[in-house]
Length: 270
Image (cartoon, helix red, strand yellow):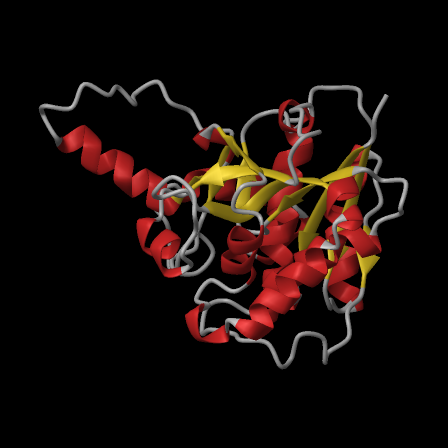
């Protein structure tokens, strides 16, 4: 039985959201597949302890991959996107060479379904599986030679590590970032789309229900002429994208976050 490999990136500011995310993953896992959880980033010893305490009842111990403070320091950053975004590019090199695929998850998400369903999706012919954002602006800015609007969100990815390693994908993405800084806005996500534009498998939007997708659906529902019925739609993954987060500015879907926060060790800090 395959071990489900989960990878995320974090820092001390995102330690609590990371614990909430991982708790939601483990609470909703129904399969008997073993799981390995890997965290890339610089975290204090106390936050590493609290993260392990939050999930120890599931019989797991986290694997931490510390990063150098100078790593990616010369790469483009934005006010809301930090260098931790680049750490996911390290996954193929940090995980054991025998690990053939992995699920990458941003820290600002919540799982509502068994992650095993995502794990079992066949990506043998693809470098990555992800959810399309239908971002026409980024598609146009990056001059992607694919169907208009095809642009995936890198916050949830099922990664074919074999293909990444064999084709030196991380180097290709890093080279793109260095050579195209003037058009980069969403950091590694832009570069991943530029390099893998024809090599990714679109997933059902339930696997990365971003704040932007939620707003789009709300606009559709308000149109009386719309025949689309979204009342029965239940996302497997809620992704709190954008500036507003449940733990600081609030979010319209924040109840799911607080439900899982209440069963982490951070609930004692409230």
